[in-house]
Length: 498
Ligand SMILES: [Ca+2]
Image 1 (cartoon, protein in one colour):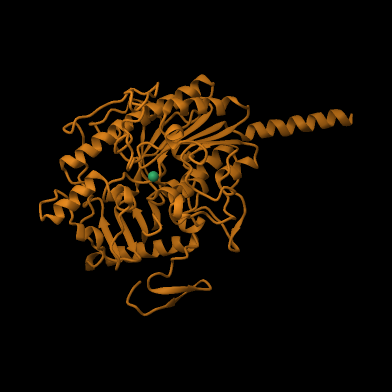
Image 2 (cartoon, rainbow, N blue to C red):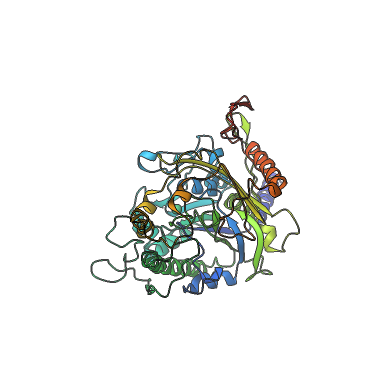
């Protein structure tokens, strides 16, 4: 009798456990990807595999990164916490050496305790290892990043290996290195020649490169329309064809392994494209990201576009919701940690009537020398940026500094020639402490309304919202630059700054 009861109890526990698991998750992150995709109405580029994914996805029109810098963004994607809360203030590699606080809980840790196996293929770029530990890792820490982040045939094989090595639910994080720049590489500005089939650059079996002439490409209005920019974008498009075909291979692997219809697929990117006004900025081109969410169990909105405002900090609550796993109770520096994002799964059923109309971002550093803290709120009409250290010139990331596009602007400026850019270098470097833009009327964000008497109510309301978010996310910068944080309050400096 005892044995029968035990067997029944085990069976019930097993069934409940199965009930709680909805399937698997494949999270795909592009590196420095933006809106050069047919899914986002760019008709200059061909992205057949993104198109196919979008046919079984809800596409989010207004998705935003929590921070437009690589490691900080990846930490926010995997912890659900802004970089200023999880401690990954800047880049992880080399002498930059930034990493999250030791007590932080990341998705692979949260899921492991619920029996979900975890894997990462591609770019990791965050630490410490104890915080971001997957069961299976194929990353730049042990392999060539080109092979695990850009060789789509190799990546496809690793995905197959991970999925078939065990049974049970899985969380697989595939972090492409495409379409990041390839500064100093023999493979071209965007590594667009890597694996293109020529003897010098090797073969990626599954990739058929797509090429674009300078006249073919679309130059967004926030970039200077010059031959240098067009050549840069053309190279980026070829690399994007590798990412696009890689997406197709991953979906094919899900199908071949029988998991296309029990796996949630999310595609997004870590930060804006590596061009001026975008990457490391929190203007629209730096903060906006593609976001596609494909659930086999939520088919009613497949192929639709959502106007809801979402953040990369919504990815953790979405994946926890999918698996039926609670966010763990834990503290950082004696303070309870709470998520500021929320699950996006309800969006897959219907467009919400309220509650998805604003997002927040924060930035402190990129490389170790590039301190430029910003706090931002973006709602349906406006963007408010608080530049905490605006007396200093805005710092330029190395890959943008040496890029053909920005070099051309530097040279033209030094030679007093027209730049074809919508702002001068001086305007780009020196910013007001508060920048308020009506994005609905001024998409390029050129007219700062922060000192306009007609916008003071809007400014003050948005400042209050921003301060509340900084308080809720335990932002150490919440008194800067007007004061010093001491025991939870701001001691004023009387320096005429907010
Ligand atoms: Ca990046």
